[in-house]
Length: 110
Image (cartoon, rainbow, N blue to C red):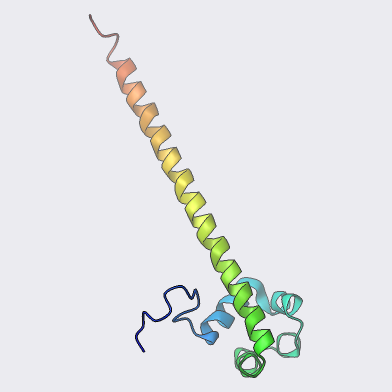
């Protein structure tokens, strides 16, 4: 099996451990427990206990994976929006400096 066998799978190459660590860092254990109310997130949560539970419980793993995919899409959308805003600001600044340079040169003689 090649590494290109799942080009449309957004989770391809991402381990469950990386997903749980990312979600825990972003939402905290309380946030995860609110989204997926299971004991491994509510009572003495740890990465190890969460991984053990999620590997044995397909419905919970699917929920966690959907939350992760949703978060990644939101992050990508936000990055794209911020890049567009930065490009617009840079373009606007460029126009402003070129207009200022033209006004300092004085009126053109025709």
